[in-house]
Image (cartoon, rainbow, N blue to C red):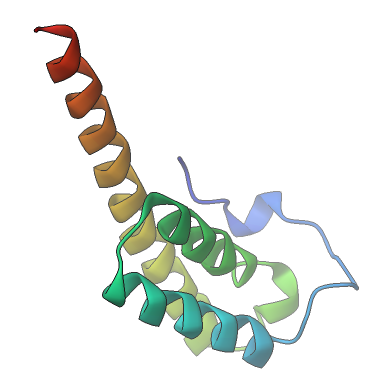
Length: 94
């Protein structure tokens, strides 16, 4: 799964404000800490990608943090996918 670059996003007036997206992301991250699942990692990545939208680019802090979060959540999503693939291939070897 790849992070969506700022240049590929288009203006979306229906996007919530950055504070709402960040609050949702923090909530999902807290749930992930308690029970790390693939679905929570994917949801966190989607929220981090949302913060890369041009609507939030007026804050350099949000731009930097959202890019870092995209990288980190992408790594976690990839780990889940690789783990699932390893489990599937181990099951086929029996």
